Image (cartoon, rainbow, N blue to C red; front, top):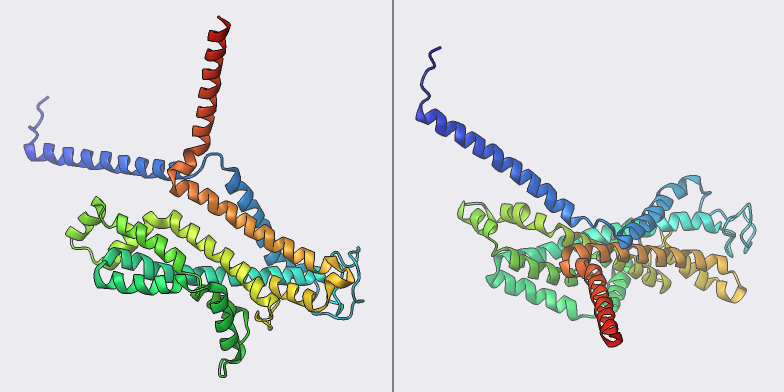
Length: 342
C-alpha cells in the first residue's frame, strides 16, 4: 500500500515535541526528587516537635470551647486540682484550666502575628538588600546592624510602655495585637542578616542571571526565583520569630507590660506573682503556664533544628558520618587486636 512521504519539517516538529515531553518529564521527576530529598526520612526532632506544637495548638483552639469563662469569680478561691476544677482555682476564684486554655490561645496569637511581622521586615531588609546591592544594600544593612546591636529587651520595654500609655490608640492600647506588633518590629534584624547573605549568594546563580537577561523585572525575580529557594530558611526564621515573641510576651507580662484586655500565658504568670502563689503554695497556679511556655519553646526549637538539617547538609549527614566513623574505629581496633594476638 502506498504511503505518502514524510516531510523533513514534520520530522523536526515531531522530534521537538518528543524532546519537550522528555524534558518536562525529567523536570517533574527532578523537582519531585528534590523535594523528597529535602524531607528528612527519619527525623525524631521533627516528629517530636510537630507533635508537641500540634497538641498545644489544638488545646489553644478547642480548649476555650469547653472551658468555663476565664474570669468567672464565683468559684472558691485557691482550691487545689479536683474533679470539679482540673487545675484548681486562683486567688480570685478563676478556674486555672479555663485561664490556661484562653492564655494558650492568646500567646499563640501573639507569636503568630509577631512571627509574620518579623519575617516580612526581614525579607524587606534582608532579601531586597542582598539582591539589589549597591547603595540600597548599604543603607538597609546599616539600619539592620544598628537595630541588631541595640539590646532587645530594654527597647521592647520602652516601646511597650510608651505605646500602651499613648493617647489616641483607643482599644488598641495594651492589647494582644499591639504587643505582637511591638515584638515583631523589634525581632527581625537577626533574620534579615541571614536572609541577606543567602540572597547575595542566590543572585549570582545561573537561573537568576538567565531570568535577568530575559528581561524579567526585579520584583518577579525575587518572588519567583529567589524566595522559593529560601523556603526552608524562611520557615526557620519564622519559627525563631514565634519563639522570640512567645518568650518576649511572657517576660513583658511578668514585668506588668503585657496586654491587659486579654489573657496570655504571661499574664497568668504575672497574676500568680502578684497573687503570691509561690508564698501560699498554690503551685497549680503558676506551674501549668510555665510548662506550656517551656513545651512550646522546646517543640518549636526541635522543628527549627530539623529545618536546619535540611538547610545545612552537613548537619543532616552528621549522624551517618558519626556511625561510619564508629564502625571504622571498631574495625581498626579489631584489626589491631588480631595483629597483636598473632
